[in-house]
Length: 456
Ligand code: GAP
Image (cartoon, rainbow, N blue to C red; front, side):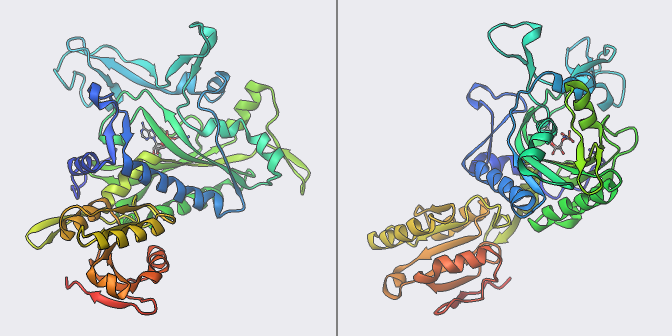
């Protein structure tokens, strides 16, 4: 994390919203929680799925040069010898001789305990991989690790992918999955978790073309966040210094986001050179080289790796979308989430609980939920219900009133502007679809009209 930034949004407000509305809960909360592990609630799971779907669409579905994989969390232990994690995935740890709290020595400004000022032990190296045993016998021969990154599953399957898909260079593999790190320094909500999800790309290229692909992916990944609504001024690129570079990296840029606690890494894009395929060839004894049919050459491809965190993306999208604005005599809290990311796309709200209105609204609800995550709410005043949807980022509310029973029309209210249009119920699905894809609200379907224009 780099220098402190002016606070735009308080982390406490984000944590409180996530807790209150069911985005994110502390893990095993009824037992007092488990440090740096988090549970995604009914809205959080939708947000996370939407982030992963948007990523998969952009990097696999819409491209000819990418395929997906889903590899196992536990891998052959030699993987971690070859990757360098067994020896090198370590943090220097010191312990306070008085209060026994442990700290990463490279995080400390002074040489005493930040908590009680006690004397600290000499640093010792602490491996961040979680260890467990495979099978019934707890002995060193059966030790396996929970993967600290999804990347290795893609490297060891390089030849399988080439053989089964006949992909030619340059091409990439994408994977989304859980990773585990026994982080010493945790905190800032989901920012440093011990169990988290990654969205990783391993893009294989001919050596010599790696520089241009490295720049290409930096640009591509930065644009992905902007396209999904993150403000440009809250993103920055930061090149790793020589001292910072991971043991496998020739070059690396972080995409940093301006979190409430300051600029911090959201995604890393590394040029890994041929490190991984050379190492796995060496330790497995299996050739992982590539035959270029055009030039008749054998070589080990270089790898460009854009590696993003799902949880960090969720946190960044929430922080960026969070807003408060005065509305009548209260504060309207809203999430300006991109429609692709919003957990609920449409809320159907009958004006009252009168039987005929409820029946008409439930029919619309049943139709619309065939297409999107839709919620139905008939509790409390319409104003309260709008606020509840604003707070979770629902882009559109559909209101059914008494006139709807006569004229077969419903009102669509837009979250950000609070403007409203009235459209034939028969046109609802098509209209909502167009609006969710970005059509301006006041572009009307046949028979539609502007209903209410909020003056701001
Ligand atoms: N394969 C390369 C790799 O794993 P990394 O920079 O260590 O690189 C990539 O991790 C991304 O994974 C980070 O940018 C971050 O988004 C996410 N990540 C890493 N450690 C995390 C943690 N403890 N909690 C949440 N996300 C984490």
